[in-house]
Image 1 (cartoon, helix red, strand yellow):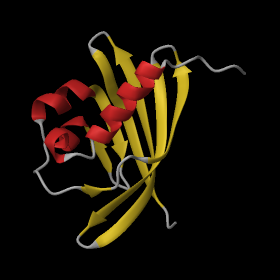
Image 2 (cartoon, one colour; image 1 turned 135 degrees about the vertical axis):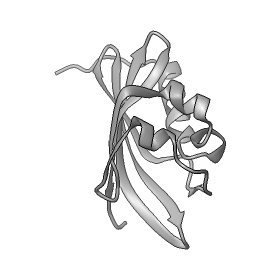
Image 3 (cartoon, one colour; image 1 turned 90 degrees about the vertical axis):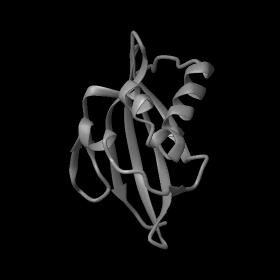
Image 4 (cartoon, one colour; image 1 turned 180 degrees about the vertical axis):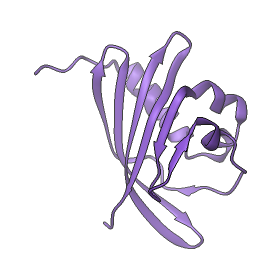
Length: 125
């Protein structure tokens, strides 16, 4: 099966958006978050918990100690408006480095890319 092409500009923008979720200046910017999370967003967290849009947007600011750029970042075009990003995250929480395999589904809406789904699955390198 052939995959649809994804422009370099779209790859760059999607990488920047995904990495923005790991930067405090964007992650806790309510206006940015409201523009970037789809109304039907859902997350299966690394913890195993399920989160809806309001739960991920309206969280208290906290330090984020994530390694950037994101490791093993891959793009998978699902259709002309939908792209899956997969990568490995490494972030420090309370002095402990936690690793996860990540997957995000981004949709190209009339107002730009929005995240519709995210999942984190723990792993040990």
